[in-house]
Image (cartoon, rainbow, N blue to C red):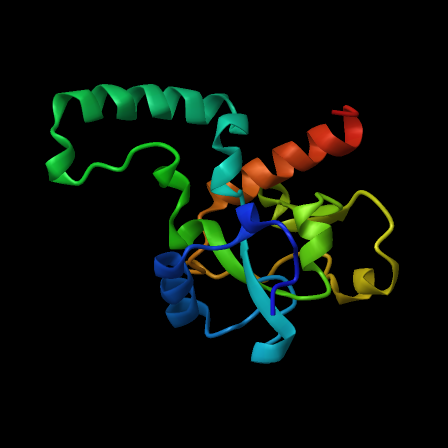
Amino acid sequence: MRTHTNSQFDVIPSVAQAVQERDRNQCFITGTLLPGDTDLVWMFPPTFYHLAGPTFSVFTQTVQIFVVSLSAAQGCKRIPEFFETASNAAFLHKDLIPFFLDNTFSVDVDDHHRVLVFRDMGPAQNLLPSHLQVTANHGLYDWYLREHFRISLKVNLCDD
């Protein structure tokens, strides 16, 4: 059962399978392992690739130059496919998903993966730890979490 109503947040099947194999339904925030309690989410939905920050702009220019020099048959990823990767998706407790997708809370990767809450979440807020427990090979690419955090700051502090 989907925990959102907008298909732009659906994780594509190939990525879903890779994340399932990597995480086995474990919530990346709470550590919950029960399959019925978690669902897949994008850290940074590919639909919103155009909102990615300046670092991504430099990266895309490099990729575009690279893609121009190679034929499509060589399998180069085109934008927004850069975002359609298992590193950009994870399982999340179903009670947290609407708040994550609405940027109510986010993770500050550069402050030891601290979880910050921007707006009231009601009882769901009790599920959040102060920091993520991250291992060296946790599978999530911090860049996507940084972008989620950057957008969350913009949405909550800049009134955009």
